[in-house]
Image (cartoon, rainbow, N blue to C red):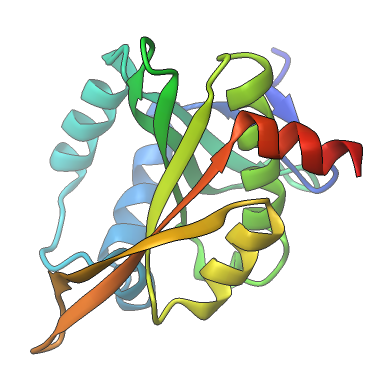
Length: 183
């Protein structure tokens, strides 16, 4: 059987979520390094992941992909648009590289670029936004490279390690994406 590659980049491809991705998601969401970046606080079971992924896969307001390395077809994370509003043509961007050995390899940057292009070219979105902790300097830098701009600050948005943490709201508009592409 041929492998499914929905969107393809240089080093990675995006494909639909598959049942066997549950192990990767469970590993990532229970891994202390990954949990820190996603602000997760409770352990998760395979059954919980299975239920969550099933609901995500069935939702018309979510488009979910698994990020896979091209070199060995190994899944390394997930990427999605959530809370898609087809009237306002807006969505919230989500990415998680669950395999911490795959961090700083350019997979997140490439997946983000593929997803933003897909959002504007295929889903006909006008706006894509995300929330990122101010302390996540690598994430902010990567999002800026993909064309996102800081639009505001959510003050004391989450409680983490005995303190409240601020988050940036970052967004990219269709006209900015196409303007940046032309340059």
